Length: 117
Length: 114
Image 1: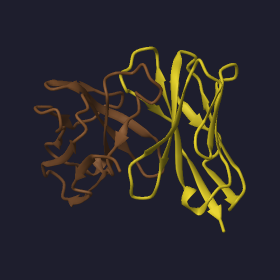
Image 2: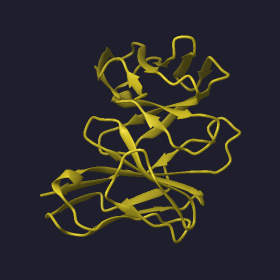
Image 3: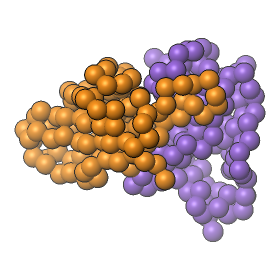
């Protein structure tokens, strides 16, 4: 079982609310990621981090922001949620070293399904 | 833009048959590919990976084949079981840097009929 946890699993909120999606991993992985996934569709990278105090935007533009103050924690925040933010958000982590097969493997959390009314 | 894609959105197979899920990619610079399985309500789970210097890799009941000439990747599942029902994604890592910035395809839903 993956040691990466996301809360809340499901969240329904009104437009304009501020929300934070939590992601924590106990594997000591340096790299962490946030992917956005609409139902039945592919995953799109929206944020990633290579370590503490490191954050970068992903390939898909997102109005959300992230922080990485501790290795194990990578929360995602939406300051003012809108219906267009309705989606599933998946957090993942991976080890830094990559010279072995499987070393680039991402371990995913179960996801946070956000619905903005 | 360039993307990783799957040929069929849905594949229905009989329990016990072999399943073949296909994926086409367009970036010849991609050097690493992964197959993920995503069950309903869960995050993607690693199945098997392959590097571009290989053309075949086998795991338990699964085999990944890579054809770099036609930029095609396939996942073969032997003796498909009801528990194999899920959405399967192929993903690629572009370039030699290990950024973990995987590009995902759209997914194929595997339905296993009893």
